[in-house]
Image 1 (cartoon, rainbow, N blue to C red):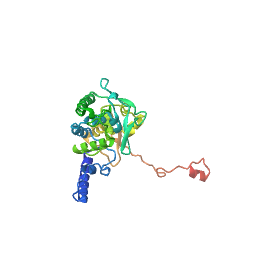
Image 2: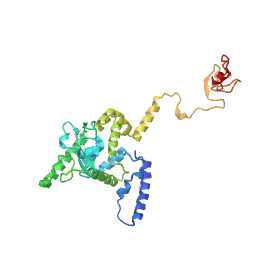
Image 3: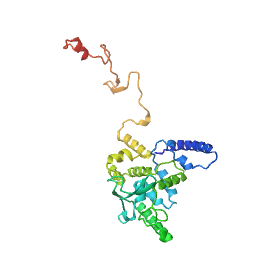
Image 4: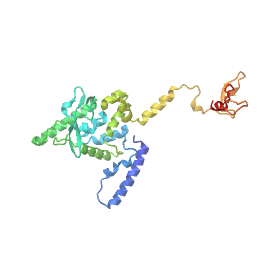
Length: 306
């Protein structure tokens, strides 16, 4: 997860790299976004935004006509191809459900319609009321665009299209995502990492592993636990505090640690009221840890092996 310290480190590396690239190109036009999204500048190839960072991205994306697409991926965890491939016939606004039945698969630079990634990926996900409202607004906008284009409009049945109704190229959507994230002044993540954000948010909201696995349409809950979840820092601190609170203490921890004398850590008091040191004393004999010869074993060799 992009912590404050990691973001500061990234910003410094990005500024240094961008300056070096500009100097190398000698004044030629370069793409700052391309430098910004370089994987080697990140702590890990897979990174996740915090809720605050995600909110900042959505605020910027809200100004774009395809905001609903990024909203759906961020909160419901669709894959890129699934988001590009969903159809209006798959959406039931009254029941607040979305069936993921098709996706757009990129083959080389071309793309085509295909089945979901796995058998488990072909499923129905529940939608929150906010997401349904966003999709209703998107449908109204798309209807306006269809009227404006008239006979030039291309009917595909897809929920998310270009202004003329044509299908979205998955790679183009990824580029748009990076541009919006860069405009928001955020550290880079992949579009697919919004799926990780959705899983993290669901866990933070109290959803159990089975529910998150169903939302992501995984074949097993193990995949959900091991791959698609990140512990939010605030949740980790809450868990740490809760764990410490379980243990009852008779001595206040704010009063400092108990003193340790030269005789060892003090133990229970004896009948005279004086504490006994908890130190094991060796009264002669061999050094601690030495084995005692078993007299019933008469073979010196066996005695050495005992």
